Length: 463
Length: 173
Ligand SMILES: Cc1cc2nc3c(=O)[nH]c(=O)nc-3n(C[C@H](O)[C@H](O)[C@H](O)COP(=O)(O)O)c2cc1C
Ligand code: SF4
Ligand code: FES
Image (cartoon, rainbow over all chains, first blue to last red; front, side):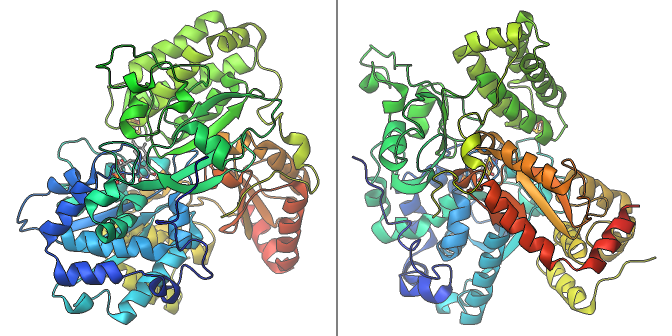
């Protein structure tokens, strides 16, 4: 039975864990002090590279490699920008870091700034996360008062400053270039790449954009050494431990830490207590946020050739494949944010798709025609099908629209809409065809509605 | 009528401007500061922010209309956001929404009969593991039941002074 790890999360349970006094007592800033006073920036970067840490924000890009894209010996100021926009449906991990251990992130920012030659960090937090913002701001004030931020942190001649920048409610600002526009005081519209942020990012300057969890992992990486930290993982080229999130139809939804490479089944059964109701089997699992295509427990890996990267799991259920950036790609989906959602047999997948397509339609920034129109059409066709006004041709129309959205846009929101839509139709086609004939009756909350009226409630697990 | 910040907030605005290499970057935080004082982003607020940051008002307006958290019309003293996204919906978000609509005597997007609450639908608020959830005046309430909803709403209603209610209602007129 898989057990959660307590390393990255070792301060989560402490009383007042968000305060500097408690966090420091429990080890915070020991690494920042040691690293900044005894190591060179290049040596730090080498450890992060050896750690094989894949970005925790969704795309899974190796952080060490990204840091290497900065122009060497930049004449211009370099910025570190933390992506704390956490808006991908199903994802609720970065909020736990900022609320329960903001000093892990702040310490990571200090170490990362020192390594990449930056003096200023902007933490872009979605403004709805009021407690996260308050705790980060308090943390920053306390660090300034102690001299850990300011002109000479730990007596080192490398001035450091961190600012919290609130968003204003727009999912698209999680996309790194939209985030930069938003940080600069503009509408959160993604920019064409190249140039990449490492070359021309915030205020036109070289910028590293990393997710909250990515940077909050830096203290552990330097504490253990990159190679040792990497080896905590069960998979190659995808190091460390990370946060796992679970929502939907399970007994105990929540957040846990575990090595990279846990299987979905381990997370669902060992951590989440299994399906909410044993009588309703799991119908699908969205592995890492709503933009990642859904997996069916009944599907098995088909890779009989021993040279195939997925050969090791040939014949196994998709739920029994370790969760990693590359392995999930091998299943035709994505690891995304590593926060999974379980949907049981009470869920009509047409209705589920409709909910998500409405989300994407609402969140498209509207710059690209295929995305602006495509998300709207997908939502409309799903509506039609659910309301019994659709036709069989509409099912193929969903596929056509999705195919036309992919690869034709400024940012990945369009692909992140089309890919899950295609998976819904391909894997639950019968249900879409049935909706075309009969519409959808019943509701997505059929399984739980009765238990919410009154005081009883579900078995929600708080941190 | 022109809009001005209180002297205390004016100091906060100075501090915000000091954080960035450009004035313009302070736009969103400054709008938040104004909304905190004014309750919503009026044309006067937009004018003020544009002047303070030396930007054309059209640019500030473009920012305001892009983001959902800036209220472009007056709202009640209490704002309730109910998450509607899939992870919440499969765990009962609609039950919560319908309960609130009945309780308030209004639909989503509107203000309650007594003028104390504006009810809005939110997209995923990063609390999916504690679904269903709502946010009331910035605070998260998670793992909701209808009883739990009654408790938080009734407590907020009791704390809302009658005067503020009249003001918000007349503001809508
Ligand atoms: C539509 C869209 C939304 C995104 N939202 C987030 C987000 O909320 N948080 C995040 O860290 N990354 C998000 N990303 C990914 C970022 O663009 C970027 O890859 C990430 O911040 C890089 O950090 P990492 O390498 O540490 O993962 C989003 C991407 C897209 C296309
Ligand atoms: S793909 Fe969609 S969200 Fe991304 S830039 Fe184009 S219109 Fe905007
Ligand atoms: S879906 Fe409601 S908080 Fe994420």
